Amino acid sequence: MPIPSDHSKPIRQSAKEGAYNQIQQWIIDGTLQPGEKLNDNELAKALGVSRTPIRESLQLLEVQGFVKMYPGKATQVTEVEGEEIKDLLPPLAALQVLSAELAISHLTDEIINLLESTNKRFAEAIRSGSYYNALRIDEEFHQIIVDTANNPYILSMVASLQAHVRRLFFHNSIILTEKSIKEHTKIIEIMKEGSPEKLAPIMKENWLRTIKEFQLLNKE
Image 1 (cartoon, one colour):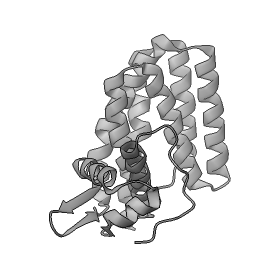
Image 2 (image 1 turned 30 degrees about the vertical axis):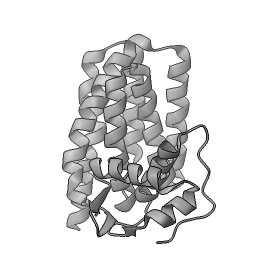
Image 3 (image 1 turned 120 degrees about the vertical axis):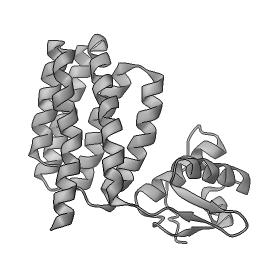
């Protein structure tokens, strides 16, 4: 089970939080591959913690669908199923729409500037062919809106879904395009106008178009 030795150490986190975040990240980015068996002792040594927080982290990751624990046998990273995109994106899109609608009443010039500058970075990443970086910045753009909505329940649900989307996108090499840049721009314009009723169509298109593109890609 190859584990990198140069990972950043958790700062101001409990042992369980640090272990959970790092193991989840390794599963998302493919450091820990689908189907790979996980060894408590190796993970504990790599992260500089005891086996207890590792076991607690793996239990939580199992609840979230990232690993499968077989008592007395092994713990394995779950497989990545491309068809999951049809189940993941619609609820996430709905939560993103609601977040944007709620965020309108909390908008400030600072937040608008942050959205615009983030979309500019997103555009630069796409046009330079830095597709993994573009995926990361796209998530950052939408997270600004979720944070601005200031609803802890939405924040928690989005974080859970987004982790699975991040893993799915990474393993399937999903590429975002110029269309996403334009949609981001339109979203910002509508939010500045204060027109929540106009947000649903453009926000849903921004998320759900990926399902169509993914299905077309896998038919080729």
